[in-house]
Length: 312
Ligand SMILES: [Zn+2]
Image 1 (tube, rainbow, N blue to C red):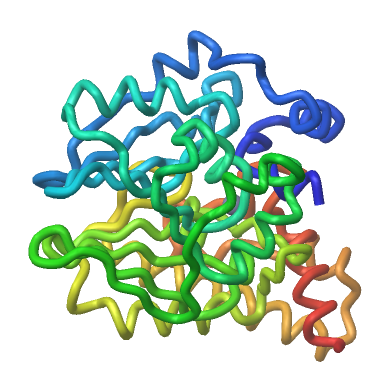
Image 2: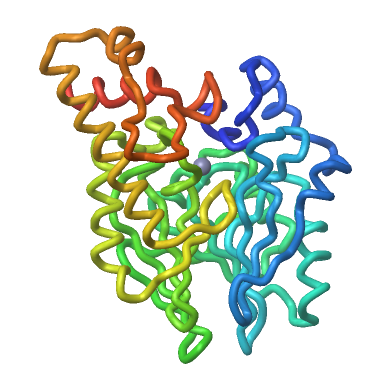
């Protein structure tokens, strides 16, 4: 479970013990390398991202990509990085607007996407998918007195906030990375933040402890694409720079290919170890890796989860 929460932080780190230690004692403050890597960049019009996901360099890791959407009423922040990053997020926002942060949306429960929610206080509005709120309530960051920082509002399948060019549409299409991943759509500028439903171009990290599913993820992505294709061209990812709807389609295809591989391996009577050793990324997925790290999102972890699901 603890492994799951720091997933992002783990990319590129070889030592699990370092990671678990890192989770138990979060960095006291941003490292100089992470601060340097955390920049605010305009995506379109009034939408920015604060980067610094640092996939290739854990020393520069601050958490997932944060989106900053400036509406008439105030600033909407999507994902708040690891604990300790609130002041930096606010400082970066100040360089592009004087408006206050009025709303937080978290794409899902993990601490590298929700860790600095508390820095925005208890007056800010906050929205997540209902399963994500339940997952967050089990995290140390939101226990006891800190429960006051849990999201105020939830939705099940669909939720619209604001209107006109400020409209934001939240969608839930089913299980994948967890059981509560939101697609945050800005229809006025044909852009969406998909969090870790497309974190990187590699096998996903699936958090089975928070309801994630290797087998259902491809169907969830297919539903998202079918519904949102006409509204979106630009995609903000969990942990890589922005991509396109075309990239998301390729990723969905990649996850379907892997789910099919797992099903065939089960049917052929292969062990998880055998199937993992034999897995190769099909050559049509250019630039894809089996996983960002030997300990996370690798073929063996994904196959074990798929086997558990298929054998139920
Ligand atoms: Zn995540």
